[in-house]
Image 1 (cartoon, rainbow, N blue to C red):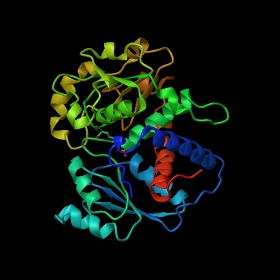
Image 2 (cartoon, rainbow, N blue to C red):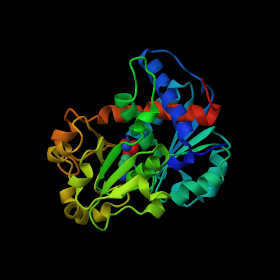
Image 3 (cartoon, rainbow, N blue to C red):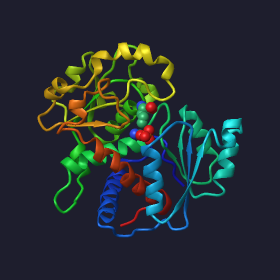
Length: 313
Ligand code: CP
Ligand code: NVA
């Protein structure tokens, strides 16, 4: 049994397989072809933080694959009334086949996984958001590494430059892990006080990223420019301080102009136009944010298939 708690839980060749499966599963979905390998399987989704994309993509994806879902939040379960996470894991994992959790400290999902009889997927923790990066990379491959016949070339990621402009948060940490495994470089620019911590990110190879004081320098010659909210869930009390600290880290057209002419723009969403990104960029021709959001569902269907049924095809 495998869990998917951090991006580094899988190897490069497993990602190559997942990207191929995601492309095939997406093609079937677009052709209205039924594909229900998870009939009679149940996914429990546990949300300790708000969500739109993660909930809809996992829930719709599981139903499309023939399974069903149970949706729990802190407020409407005993987890909000101090039942130990270990006990919740023991109970929930006796009744379902797979679990997705969105929570605060990463240690919490690790404690759940350690007591679970079934695979556990990280739907976002304070430190990591692996399903999102899975979708982001698949989106990049769709645009830059897939031919007309739908042949997926995950190798197209090798040697690429991804510019990360903004907070040294869960998304940034996960980008670093992906760079280390898949062979690209992240140009990171954060305001001081919000830097990435390679120990928290859990990376060993410092060659997979470069730090830039000036966000414009990070964007120079990038293949992809990406950012995220200035204040992540759980950090709302810092909102005002962050708003002033991050003022120069807004992705705008001038920054995009420094990247490669065909550079893509991504944002995991939800976005705040006029804060971390201008409307011109997020609604502009280089932005692939809607494909990125939709691809959450396709990659997660491939991920659930892999965790429950192993290698198909
Ligand atoms: N990107 C993402 O995880 O979105 P939600 O918070 O809406 O799930
Ligand atoms: N970094 C953001 C991502 C939201 C999908 C957060 O943790 O709130």
